[in-house]
Image (cartoon, rainbow, N blue to C red; front, side, top):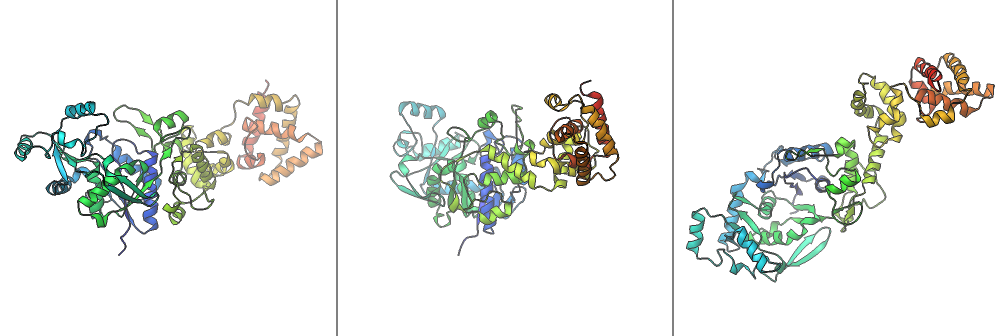
Length: 506
């Protein structure tokens, strides 16, 4: 019988969620939804020394903002909990004991000083079949001495006993069959008595098995640990329930070589975290995609295409479309360059597609900051609809359309020099008279009347219209001039032209 698809995203609450982790969560979610499966959020907090307050809440809020739905987790509950590893101590201990009783793991008492001494004595030292018999562990120490040390409260670790010269086969849905010899692996620590918690490797395997995870989808950086996990599944007698491994390509620096880091974002001016992060220890504030003005749909679309393609040239895809098209067959084996400029492009495209009223709602907080909180939302919607094609972020709407809300008090110097001539004030006085006589200020009607007037007077079109724009907008920029004047009250248009006549070159 085919297993039900159950995937898990298992971050550690050691700081903000990196954008690479977000992509891993997204791919898990897409695969689960496509196959009618479940998405688990498991908090791997066994490293108590690195725990950061607020990190778990940050993870949940990030996934929620992006629309990556969780079926089971600390907040959602479920039949396989607890979903936080620090609450599963007793569960792990019984499987650590099983490995010890079966002779597949052993207890080691080596102190940090002793381990450092071994590393200095033996170049490229690793704790394995070639060195374990010269160390302080239960493989070489009498049983009564081991028991006495444990009873005395001496700190110890439990190490996995790896037999050398075994070929370990890892079947990966992206990379195919990967074969690694066990001799390159060390006897990994599975459990530490200091905090009565397992390490990542042990907890990870136990949780994946007990939570019936069918596919482990994670970053390429975890590929070296896959052989160890295969051996642990076999040692615990769970070979038949081993999940299918999927190791995703790395996210690479936009420029140069290597894995994407926060430093790259700081240097080039883009976020590497989904939300703004306030470090509780240092007080440092790191930028986030949400606070920078990215739409969650744009971030999801952008991330989905970093290391995967739909098999055709389609770029703009909703979450539902991504779910329908997603396949590991179209995932790359090599790393994906983090083209942050493409992320900006996606945001631009999604803003253009957005309903004007919805975009106006997003723009209202920016207007409030500028002192225009009480502007009618319908007016705002029409204004943003005219300029949204020029923006990459919601905040750009102010730069592109501030003249809809405030009359110019200064005029662009270069435009004044080029467009405001000696005879311009007289032309503008005539234009005011024309505008005062227009009852229907809709764009097409006002444009026809003004154009007919210009033609009848044989005035130069540019001389009139560029000065008109300068007077109303404050610079020679903006959308179609008569679309602007249709939206503004006629009295406001006239007042602005009069102010320009009275102000420019005076």
